[in-house]
Image (cartoon, rainbow, N blue to C red; front, side, top):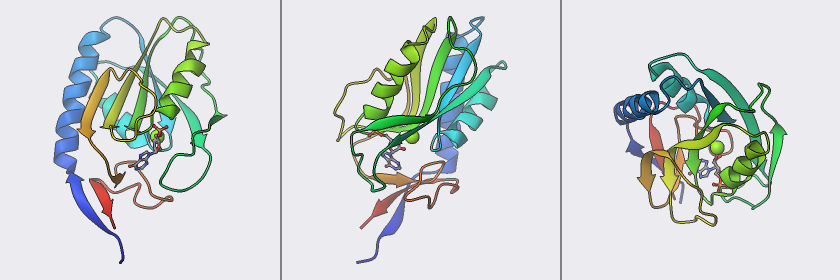
Length: 173
Ligand code: IMP
Ligand code: MG
């Protein structure tokens, strides 16, 4: 049977939650010279909205991480294909990620960035998807929590499809 998409999080709900997260982050990092590090490609839309909703300007950089394999299941091996370019040492760093699934991607990135000795290192993810978690990662700011399902839209893709949809959908078989 052909798969279809079911609306899970509307653009209005996303916008409201992004504003709430931005307000909390703005308070927590007042006078701390925050740097956002986005994970490409999935996190680019969330980061763009979050960054513009903060109360003050921040620095922005990106890493590009890949897990081997192109399916909807993570293969377990993460590698870095583009590193940060701004100096991270002694900076207050907030990683901005679209969705946490097994946790392997963020677990890898936390270890990698910790090697640069930031002043602090925290995580903001839009979606915490709990069912397949293999590694516990400390999620400091979470937009939405879901149990399972493969989501697309608002930066999230399925084989490079659906990434630019403004709402978030679940792919249902
Ligand atoms: P993990 O936490 O190491 O399993 O990997 C998380 C990464 O897998 C995310 O950054 C996404 O790129 C991708 N991913 C996991 N779940 C989904 C999903 O439901 N839709 C789209 N991408 C996903
Ligand atoms: Mg991602």
